[in-house]
Amino acid sequence: MKRNLLSVLMFSAVLFCNTANAQLSQGGMPYSFSSGNDAKQAIDFVNMPTFDLVALQTEDAINDLSKGPFRFGYNHMVNMGLSNSGTWTSLSNGDRLWQMGLKSIGAQTLNLAFDDFFMPEGAKLFIYNASKSFVIGAFTSINNQEDKQFATDLIPGDAVILEYYEPANVANKGKINLFRVTHGYRGVEEYVRSFAGTEAEKSFGGSGTCEVNVNCALGTNWQNEKRSVVCLVSGGSEFCTGALVNDVPQDGKPYILTANHCGASGFGTWVFRFNWEAPGCSDPVSSPSTAQSLTGGVHRSFSANSDFSLVEITGGLVGGTVPVAYNPYFAGWSNIDVPADSAWGIHHPSGDIKKISQAANACISSTWSGTPANSHWQVGLWTTACTEPGSSGSPLFDQNHRIVGQLHGGPSACGLASSSMNDVYGKFSLSWLGGGTAATQLKAWLDPANTGATVLDGYDPSALPTSINKVDANTMVNVYPNPSNGNINVELKLASSQNVSIKVMNILGETVSIKMLSNSSSGNYNIDLSAQAEGIYFVEVKSATEKSITKIIVIK
Image (cartoon, rainbow, N blue to C red; front, side, top):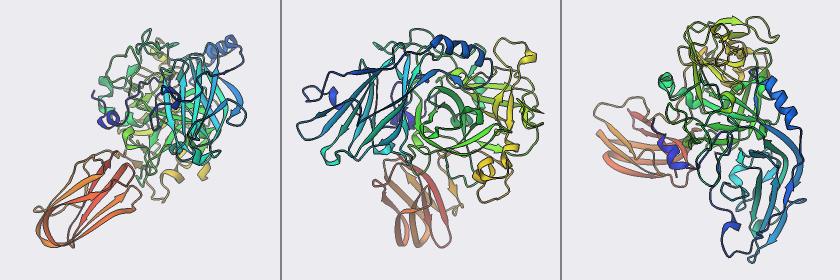
């Protein structure tokens, strides 16, 4: 399968699910990497304390028998930042540099969480491993969140360096305080990366041998829905799965549906990883370079009865939605309490790359772990593949490609007898009204105008072109190039001379450009959107009798 063009153009970092990925940043290289500068070169490392790894592994052996989150790390709780740790260096031009080293001996990966994070304009934070072979950042003001929290995806190795560059004109305005360092003690099949090169030292993938990559033949008809599914890093140390869900306004609101048992706090430091998948059917021998991640969310609603949780992504958005370069898809749903004739699951088992499972038989009403009767859907039997820890919260799709539930639990595992190959998903239909309040239901968020919708198909913000209100057969409206860098052309060929307006609106419906034409019948008109942010826009061409709307994408 060809990689999405927009993603290829915008992101090219080497990624792996249990290591760092193309986290939203501004790129570039740390100041200290430049030769001949006046930055401090010798880094003092703070060593994290040891912990009882054997006890954790013993717990994991038991926990992995359930469909809970997949624990990969141990959380060291710390209190380190600009004011009490690391070393400041004053540069010759008046700017300053702060550096701090962290080490947790034996860690396969490290990931960090901050509870007081603010980047003033011009300031940059880079984080890199001790060998300087793996760098993420620059994290800048675009990564600021209202709750002042921030987190990183996973970084390979047992030592990292934080490097903060602060221009003189914003001296003392930046804030960085680290509260959690996660020691990753296991990954995808205890995955190990060779920092000297780019190849894995052993085969990639830690999920069961019966699992099927989403880009195999089984996933051919699910190429839209797979784009909604994300790998979640919750609580710093656990993997779950979630999915972008469409709302009735179809406005790209970045709601993630997952399981309630995937976490009840710390949403400001959750990491949402998109497009973590093999490019083809075969398992890759090294990590796919397609993943992209966002950090930060707000908990909107939940209910233990159907084990659902709705989280809205808040960090790294463009125009209030997921960046178009991530190629997101907002999955459709059904809140009707009718069993699916057949079902499919798309998920990240054991924190592995994206997989797909099929149950070619009808679901049945069920329950799970003390929940009310008929609160869940049980897949009849998986006929291809199954789920695992880390699949928790993943969507269950019916034959109409609509979400009808999210994974709560179940006995299935590769190699078991067919009689055990079933799983249980909290019903979307029960979650719809939930406990009757906005904080305990889906309806208030997914149907805010109370339209009474019972089913909704998916929303694809990258579907191009889209025309609304067909124009006359003798009328031509051509908007190009699409995508563009902000400099677009509108070509008109009208049946007769008339007054025409060309209006450009952003995804929120706000007018960002308007051009009025008098007695025009044809021509090519330039629209300059270079001052606008990248994202989705709508070009409306309107006369007294006709209207055409074309969706365009601006990428810089």
